[in-house]
Length: 322
Length: 156
Image (cartoon, rainbow over all chains, first blue to last red; front, side):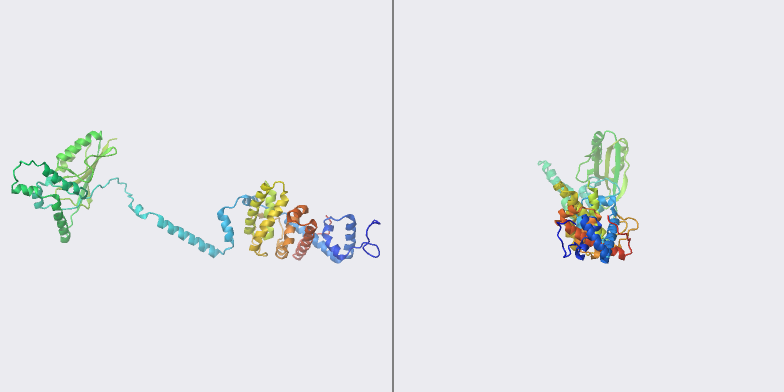
């Protein structure tokens, strides 16, 4: 101790008080004191059992935290820290999702799944899915024919069975116009028609309709039920564009009438489409004619629409032979 | 880059919270903030930035949890040295004043120099040493009570 130093006691020595000594123990243990202070603390520790116990505690504490500092973080966890948090993670963190009880978590999950399933069920266009044909048939029904039954009176009125006109719903307008056009073309100098002629001209398709409807109602009422049929076929021929007019001509010649909206031999891509009615007696003639062009095999299918007796409905197409 | 600092951040929150999920969340947040601060002021010492960031995130999250309810599993990603008994630390983490708990982690476990701590916390080095001394006494008491390792009086 130098002579310039301030004496803190009457005897001139610089004895450390217990309060100061206790507070300097950590610095003493970690060697952060100057030599003079170190010596003073050492003297204090020798005389104080509390100080000795404190040093023991500090050293134990230092030893223990030294072990704690050996705890490390795995690389996976390190990467986890570095990865920026997504919105969902932040939301879950804010909601303290991890602290929720398992029951509540499971209930929430069940609710979310249920809502998802219900939403999906409501969104899916089921009616469209149900309409999808899985059979692979590509046929398009262009027109449906009202079933009517020809009576002897009808045959008399309209002439021979071959000339019977089948009225399709979509052709109703055209068929009503036709008679008037025929009337206009009638030469004026022709003598007044006799009674049988008038009977032949007068019946127009329009007045026939109620008759057919009435008959259909009558049939339903009497419990009779007829099964309609449709003949389908396919011809594979070379040079479809050249063959098509021949078939159109032949069908017309055999008394066939187009059914539906499209004309006979309607171009459908590389193929021609025929949808027509024809007297049943002429059907074989058509098949025979088709033999020259690759052959036509007609398959008979059941159909809801019933045609007058002696009339058949045929759909076939001519495709390019590969 | 800054892997040691990020590991230190993870360890800080694990030891201060003793809750693996909260610690991961807080460490992730603190890492984001740490990178932002380092980018913003690269001249600041990483140790100072680390203390500032961890204190900031700690202050935000401390109100949301009660100390003394450890929640962690051995496979949570923190690797413990063999034979380490965490019960004295659990006791200390539960009962120690906040300032002593934090300064002990920073100073003695993460080995951040007192000067950096002083700069980051805005308090004198003497105050830091005082807090560390008190914290070590308590830590030593708990370590002795749990039959932990004793060591002879050695001046380092």
